[in-house]
Image 1 (spheres, rainbow, N blue to C red):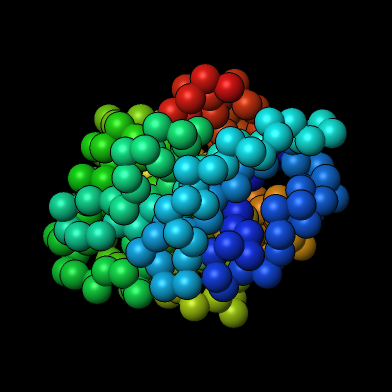
Image 2: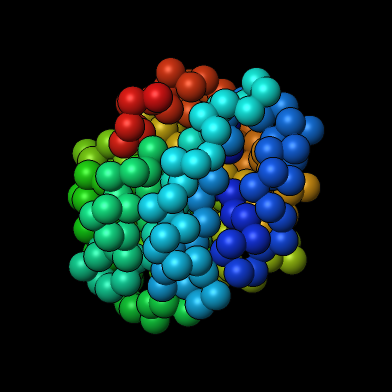
Amino acid sequence: MNIIDLHTHTISSGHAYSTFEENVRGAKRSQIKYLGTSDHAVSMPGGPHEFHFVNMSVLPKVIEDINILIGIEANIMDYNGTIDVADDIKERMDYIIASLHPPVITPGNIEENTRSIIEAMKNPDVTIIGHPDDGRYPVDYNQIVQAAKKTNTLLEINNASLNPSGYREGTVENSRTILNLCKEHGVSVIFGSDAHVSYSIGDFTRCVALANEVEFPESLIVNNDFNKLKKYLNSNI
Ligand SMILES: [Zn+2]
Ligand SMILES: [Zn+2]
């Protein structure tokens, strides 16, 4: 049972539709026990001001039986893997997701895109690479999976990406490649709902279907056991 969802957005992201409290209710419906809230960082058009992240300690740590983790979905800003998270925000986060987003960074060639992700993974503050399946940013998955292993970074299998009506490209094929390489090299992955509305919180249907298809080992999925996730987090929860 996958009880952890760390990739979720609230209305503060500017293009998401639920409040934090509605997301907690969504987590309850999906039987999620660890809910991470990870709004887009400041470089995303319409995203929150940095005070949004500085003030997150006002959120309760536990609501009913749901543990709350605080995070941010950072933007990879350049091909050297720079992220848009200031030091005073960084130190407050339980985890940081780093992702490539078209409004922020223009896709480069394979070498440039691969370097941007690998350099972001070398940043010890980066916990997860968000939606590395995005075919609009072609990468060398072999290098990325090996770097994930070396840097203790999680690669995300993104449920929203796998939606056939989604806007990212080549995601099923790319996610399959990532899963197969992670299986081969013994690298863990994290499923993310990338929910932009409370009804999607904890929805990993497409991730699970694809993992089953490639016979991906349960032991390499961190969503089903908080002890597995713990060693990747930036804080001691
Ligand atoms: Zn978004
Ligand atoms: Zn994203």
